[in-house]
Image (cartoon, rainbow, N blue to C red; front, top):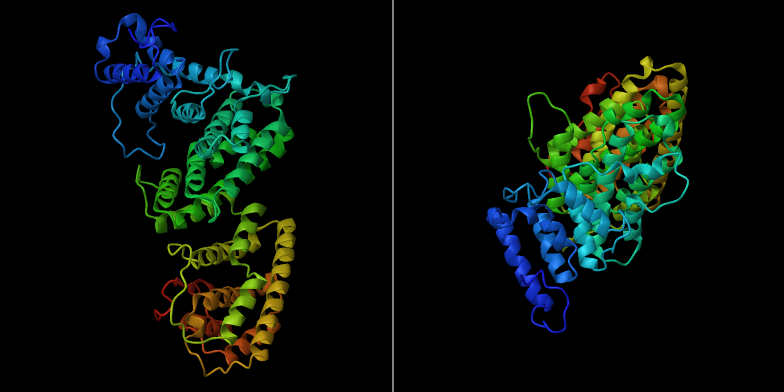
Length: 508
């Protein structure tokens, strides 16, 4: 009765927003636990009336209840207990139309003004198990004349506005949800009707946003929202089939392919995030997305997820330029790494107190090792490639070899300038900041010597690496690589080591 009273100055008690919010709380409790007590004629519109109530205190109560009882199985919180809901009260179709109205996307009704409620509305939209109405995708058709503000544009506006951090997180999640349903919609219609540029812009924008919001310096909430956005989208090689048969849609095929690879490289990188929740969510995504015979609904640990994820990426995209560039990026040595390592060597002294690093969980040697492994798989198949691809690969590898030679010479120059005594400071190369760049540059040199048909002569590379060995007392793993460089009879497949830079004093 309290909730049904309209504004009336003579009924000040019943007009109290706080009192009405308390009444809403009681009614929601009844609706969840004793739905039979709700009048039949009121059931279907019960939640809608509360979500559209005049007082935001009542709307907050209704949205909080709806979010709790419409939780998706795979929204990242599936460990929480989900209470069975009455379908006659929580009618998803009716509630979705209500949410879209409140967000200003369906008919000319009053839109939500409370920042908290806007955030809750976006959260709720992400939790519906039914598909978005098709009219939300009209702006992606060529026949659309007027520029109307759609759900995608709404999400973008939330990211650019000062609505609040929570709203931005939910908008980022919502973009993955929208992207998934956009692709599902496109798969059901004639592709000649699609606005290619606008669709490609969605792919590029989403890729850019999840990249920007997963750096170490980004707050945890946005990193977690990004991996949830990836989980909502769950782009797979199968999605490429939508565009594979359309010659005039080749640009969309390549745009989506790049987006899928970006999604996977980011998800795999988040397996070594410094926050446990982000790692667990990334591991769950990889575990559910990589098909493994005999295993279903199994969440792997981060180490296995990383290995399985890269195997999956290599299997499906190993021949693409974007994947190859990613692998090379993981094994290339930045000039600043070489300079920093050389400075550490030249100024080496006993460290009394260890300097705290921002992410102790991240194992910086893992990605280079996995990438070297998959790079070798690409090089092993060199003879199977068509001539055009052989020439392209030779050109890229030649550029990489030239860069490698410059860095080896630079390293030797720095060591010579500082007169490093090879018999001193045995533990120098056990320092992770020295070990990692040396490992990368030496293992790269090893690959050059093992694939002469691709790289050509390796005489200069061997000369420079030998000079490094003569100047430094080396970590046993680095010493093994030097041994393999000298012993050309060593088989390629035996030259792969797993060593943790977090524990560089372990002997191998």
